[in-house]
Image 1 (tube, rainbow over the protein chains, first blue to last red):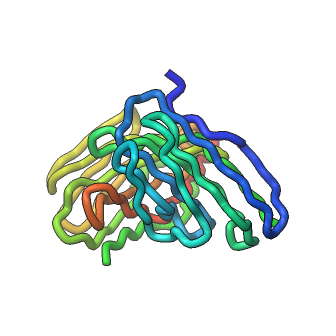
Image 2: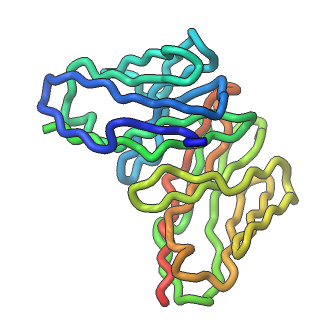
Length: 110
Length: 110
């Protein structure tokens, strides 16, 4: 099993550009999550999906949208990237109480 | 508001020098406490879940303990490969959400 996978690994965008971060899991998780991690801030929840077909806002949802395409895939979209969105983005799946994380996407917005 | 505070922010140990990392939390109705390890450039990796005060869990040189207000991650005779950032987290704000601390960066010197 690959676990939780994320693409791309690294991306550079210009301000105003859009992009979609992809996440897929093969662990049959019902719940999936998107976090961002910034120095000194810890992991902050952007959006989550408790089950296929549902999504909810987390702590820092502004500037982002998500799609739970099916049980396996949960994508995060930046419609108009801003320098404040420079961060490392992690996707996670949940099994009972435990979250399992992907390897992350490093995003630089210039 | 649920809060998780980790100390120290950084810790440098000689190989074999045992120490402890602290995670203090403020949450209404503790439903568990998680410890994760994060290596540079990677996603957090699950280590332990503790559910009630007095509970202990061990894995190799690591032992996690829980009281009503804090958790400790004890590292016995650490090796350089134990160098990583250690994160603690608690379920909060509903069944789906988790609040993370900002982590303790551990460096073990040979």
